[in-house]
Length: 115
Length: 108
Image 1 (cartoon, rainbow over the protein chains, first blue to last red):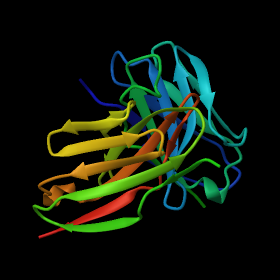
Image 2 (image 1 turned 90 degrees about the horizontal axis):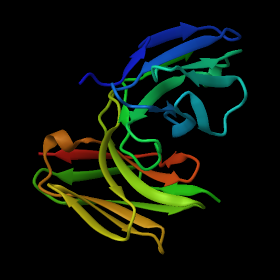
Image 3 (image 1 turned 90 degrees about the vertical axis):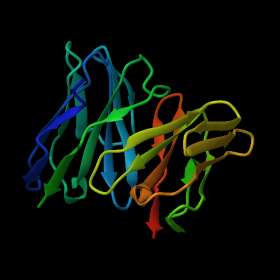
């Protein structure tokens, strides 16, 4: 089975722009979670989706949004980019309905740099 | 508060045993995960504890005490490839919280 894929792998944007990141979960997995990883803050939870519904959201401003499609693929969007948004954005998928008690399989991440 | 604490760095010798501790203070506790992350790579699952006690899986074991808010990951017969960051993650009813990670260096 193919693993979790994320596109693009690297992205450079300037302040004020917006960005959309994409995640394709492992085939058959219906839960998708997004995380932001920075050297200072570590891994921080952004959102969790199951069956096209956002189940939980982390403590991030409204500039961060996401969605999940009927084929379980997910996108996240960050508007009005700030320098502090530079990070590795990781997507993880799990097979069950509850991502918080299932093994999560992480994708390679998208490295976003905001200049 | 909501804290997850683990040592920042540890060093151990090939063939030895190392214990990485994780303490947490959180509400809505569901369970505790350990993930391994090699530099430049995605985290990979190691273990999941829901009940108190020790879970053994090959060279890796994980322990949980819910009443004490404490977990540890035990790595036996250390190999050079075990050099990585080890992330403790608390599963709560509505999110997942990760510790900052412990960077383990295994020396020959």
